Image (cartoon, rainbow, N blue to C red; front, side, top):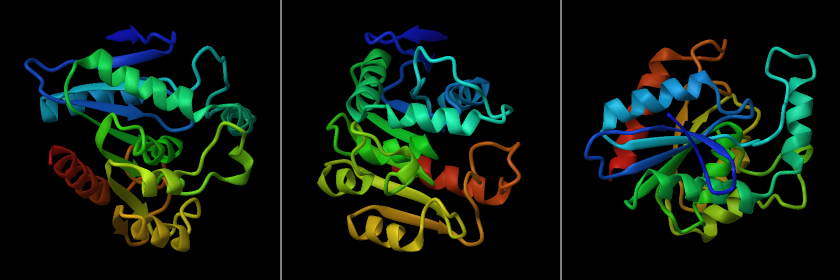
Length: 221
């Protein structure tokens, strides 16, 4: 079901009976959509946790992936995002799902925010699926801090799911993320977005199954 956070941001909540944990999901740059509704339902059924996904661009009528200007429009909107607002919404989503321990996962842009959420204090464990380890220059804005710094300073345990041919996560950045304390799982030959969206050409079903198993095992700890 859809809920509204105190900020007015919409979120999708899949509740599990007698859940003792919450998992917050931060979508990719294309935002909260049926793909993530289905993911929340699936994760709640798989884990027995409450699972809630947030809209990263609340109140903005942005073009989708099918539009020629979709990525540029959303990149411009991302430059105006504030870490405190988006991570604050993630914390509020965890609170709305229940007063219980919470983890967080994110994909692509949302993976970048998973790393930033490591320093929030609300999440015990976070998983970034191919999240940007440094803010890409085209996304940088005054409200954007560096994910790597948040991982190094944060109290959360961090796992990173990485494809070795993903240009958004250069090897040197990945090595520095690992040095900062993250557990890095590398998938040889995988490109950006290989787990969460089966419609993408980069999707790898075998790797996706393994990555989900590892991520859920990690979040269960």
